Amino acid sequence: MDALAQLEKMEGYLAQDPGNFELLARVIDLALEAQQWQRALTHTEAAVKQFPDDPYMRYRRGHALFALQQYAEAEAAFASVDDHNINLSISLAIAQQAQGKHQETVDTLLPWEDAPDLPAHGLLALLRSMHHVAQLEEAMAIFHTHQARMMQEASVLSAVSLILLDLNQIEEAGRMSEAALALGPRPLEALLTSGTLALGFATPDIAVELFNEVLTLQPKEGRSWAGLGMASMLKRDMHGAIAQLEKAAQYLPTHIGTLHTLAWCKIFIGDIAGAGQVFEQALALDRNFGESHGGIAVVAALRGEREVAQAAIERALRLDRQGLAARYAEMVLSGVTADPERFRALAFRIMSKHPSSFGNNLAEVVQRFDVH
Image 1 (tube, rainbow, N blue to C red):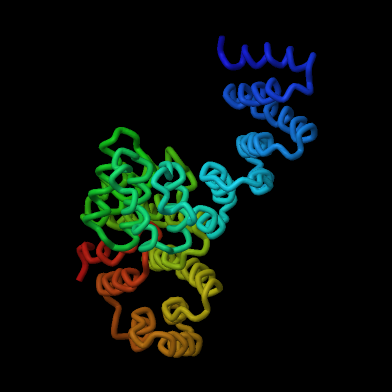
Image 2 (cartoon, rainbow, N blue to C red):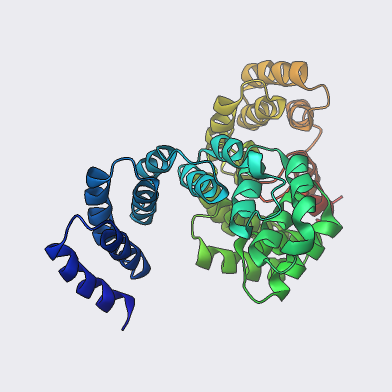
C-alpha cells in the first residue's frame, strides 16, 4: 500500500479518535511522505492546538509550511521549537535562506560548522549563504573541514567551484566543477563555473552550451545571461549581447559591472541615448564609482555636450585617477580618436576593470579579445 492509500486509511481511524497522539503523528508523517502538503498542514494545525508544547508537532508544521512555500511562517514554526539540535537548525536555516536572509542562515548554522555529522544539505546551505554575504575564504575553510567525506556530494562540490571562481582560484575551480559534473548530476553552480572558464579560454560555443543548460534549470539565473552576453561579445554579435545583458541586468539589477558592460555594448552599436540611461542606472547604485561618471562623460562627449562631459570627467578622475572611461572621454573631446577599432579596444579594457556577474575573471576574458 502506498503512502497516499495508507494516509486515507489512517485518516479514517483518526476521525474516530482525534485525540490519539501517536495516530495523529503517523497521519502527519504519511501526509508529508505522500506530498499532500495542505493535508499535512491541516493535521499539524490541529495537532499544535491539541498538544501546544510538543516540539514534534511544531517541527512537522514547519515542514508542511515550507513545502507550501510559506517560508516566513515555516521559519517562525521552526524557531518556536525549544530544542537545540542540528536537524532543527538546518530546517530553520533553509527556511531563512529561501527568503534571502543569508546572514541569518549563516548565524543559524555556524554553531554546527565543525560538527562531524553535519549532513551535506546543511553544509550546502551554509556555504551558499556564506557566498552570498561574501565570506568566501571562511566558507572554504569550513569546506576543508568536511572535504574528505563530501567528495561524492555533487551539490556541495558544485557550490564550492563557484566560490573558488569568485576567489579567482581558477585551476581549483575547474577541478572542483569537473569533479561535481563527473558524479552524474548537472548541478547549476558547476555548470556556471565551467561556462565561465570556457569564456576565459575563448571557447564561446562551449560556454553557450553550458549557460543554456543552466537556464533550462533556472531561467532567471542572471550570471548565465551575463555569460551568454559575454559569449556574444566574443563573437562580435553586439545586438545579441545587448539582448542577453539586458536579461542579466533584469535579474542582477544591482550589479554595476553588468550595467557597464551593457552600456558599452550600446555605445558600440551607436545607441548613445540607451547607453546614457544605463550609465545613469549604474550611477544611482553608487555615486562614488568613478567609472560610472566616466561613462556619463563618454556619452556626453559623443553627443557633443562639452560642458557636461568635462564636469563628469572631473568627477570621475577625482574618484579614480586611473579611470579609463574618463580618459577616453577626454580623447573624444580633443578629437584625437575617430578610429572605431581603437575605441573598441579601449572600451574592452574599461570593461575588464569590473568584476563580472559570473565570476571575478572578466579581465582575463577581455584580454583574449582580438583587439589591441
